[in-house]
Length: 185
Ligand SMILES: [Fe+2]
Image 1 (cartoon, protein in one colour):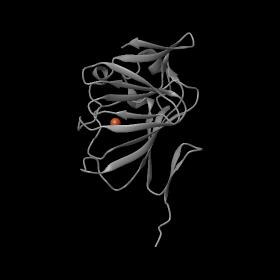
Image 2: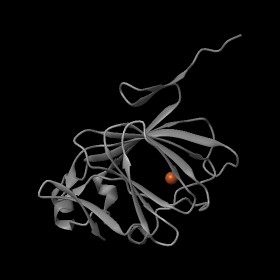
Image 3: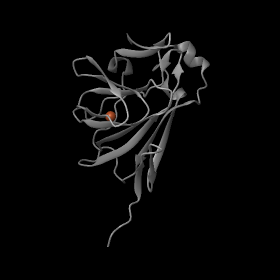
Image 4: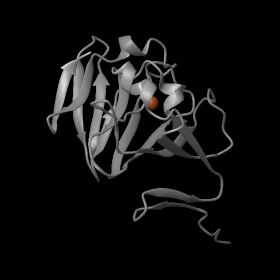
């Protein structure tokens, strides 16, 4: 007996489709303190969707040992003040666990902070594959004009630790005079 395929990574639309797909939106109101221009943050519509995640619900719970999660993050194009839309960013609760990211559509950056506090910024483009070692903080930034869609595969035991976001990242990426500019946080 051959079972029909039920879950698809649709390359053309950069989306996860089929059975047991969960979608979660992150609106601006939940990202207070993440963007540096607090005035621009207050002036923007708090219901603006900054990013959205599609995850395959494989019936495993976060914290389960030995399993994997698979999903796609979509970071929409836009800026708060001069700062590009980006994810909240995190380290893993089980801090020594790694993760793979790969570019599906759009262009942006993968901002990493090493365990010794150094910043590594990697170009995130379609078909690029990035291994994020354990203990590295990671955040996606959409520097392009279209949606940045990035696939991810991580361990069910990893969890997400968003604490102390200011201490997780030391660089900001702004658009100044039309140029992508990296500044110290
Ligand atoms: Fe992660």
